[in-house]
Image (cartoon, rainbow, N blue to C red; front, side, top):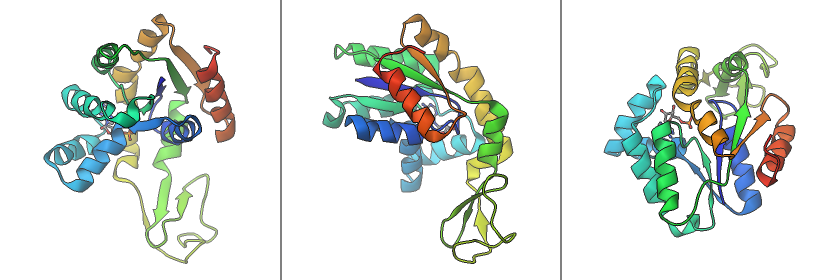
Length: 218
Ligand code: AMP
């Protein structure tokens, strides 16, 4: 089974893909994770991708298609995969269809996790982490009890992810709306698309995704 989770950054694709993959015994493939691993390893691809990622732009289709193509040929993908963060452009969707057709397969289901843009900016841009113990906080939703002091360890230094700053989040959302959103009609026309509301509690979103995967077209 080939499943695609589609949605803007911060919609919860990664978390939901992980849960579904564990439940169904499928492999979770996240192109974002693969690129971050390449960047951490310092490979040439990783170094180039890092700059693009920090701007909030998309890495080129050629690089992404080659990277995922190689990964999907591995034996652990034979049973199927949950794709999270790929495809992100029409060229990538077409390449995926061709890749799967070559082995007599196809995309089974595409689930769109729909979330309001402004809520995403608040959600992502407010995230911060204690530099000492890694506890996660949020400017609005999970503040420390004492201003500037970590509840868990008393640390006073906090970090934010490089691509979680508001300007980059807005750039990533713009890229999603212009380059990735055209995939919605692409999959709708092919009868593959289901849409779930990503604004509710995580467990409710998870139940809706499960129902969408198992039948209802949403
Ligand atoms: P993600 O973790 O999925 O939000 O991806 C983080 C960043 O990696 C994105 O903002 C892009 O710069 C890059 N990226 C991940 N997947 C793709 C893809 N399928 N096509 C192009 N760029 C990607």
